[in-house]
Amino acid sequence: MSDMQNNQGENAAGWFDPGKQNAQLVYILYLVSLAIGLSVIVGLVFAYINRGKSEDWIDTHYTYAIRTFWIGVLYSIICTVLAVVGIGFILMIVALVWYVIRCIKGIQLLARNEPVANVDTWLF
Image (cartoon, rainbow, N blue to C red; front, side, top):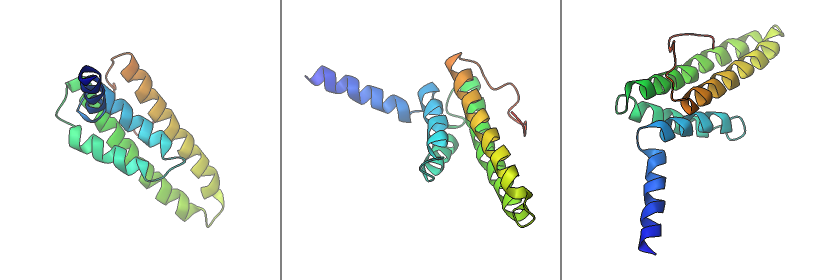
């Protein structure tokens, strides 16, 4: 019974320790934030805490996730301001699609054990 508890403890720690599982958790929390808004903050905190503590290719994912958050905040502010003119609502949908695509792209790259090629991009 203690072996099973040890294995469960190791698996749980894997999600919170720097590495591939934690980077996946960050992307999942970002996507869950579409329904539960505060989960994105938890994902952002994980990304900031664990960046620089893992392999270089995984660090590209943490940086990509952090940039996704901050660029998304900027896009949201711009869309909110432009909502007065009416175009902001359409741009908000575009920003939402952009956000989902970046998260899915990150998950796919992690599944293939690949780094993010260009973490500095504002697009995808």
